[in-house]
Image (cartoon, rainbow, N blue to C red; front, side):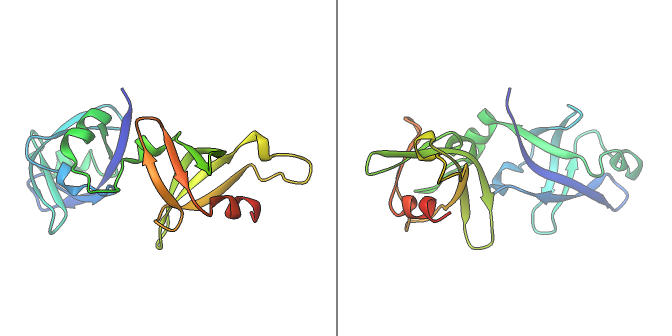
Length: 175
């Protein structure tokens, strides 16, 4: 079962078991009553109530400040299945786990494969492991970053793990 990190619990709020919620996901709608998450210690926590405005959360069975303190700094994880079930994607929006390992092509030429995705203030960037065909004595760039926006991405085919690009080869050659 693949786990996906989505949030971290902060300090306690009040005396009745509430905790501060620090969401690290683009899908806050996952945080609804009765949804369950696991911690890094494989503890299962089920939401009793959540307030996304003031970013606080209460879990079933945690009813005091003493019990809540045990979960300060805990990380919350969900599964791929839960994520797909609880999150609604807009057009041209994809889960990062679906984009990872996609192959990058430009004019049918294989440039490389996505090994990671980075979030920067201006854009998200694909970290691409350069195709072996480009590596030689003169060209030793093993990875390059490609902005995930319409200037570079023409088509995303998740089913076939293929992304068609434009101007990506220029970035690769100038890296």
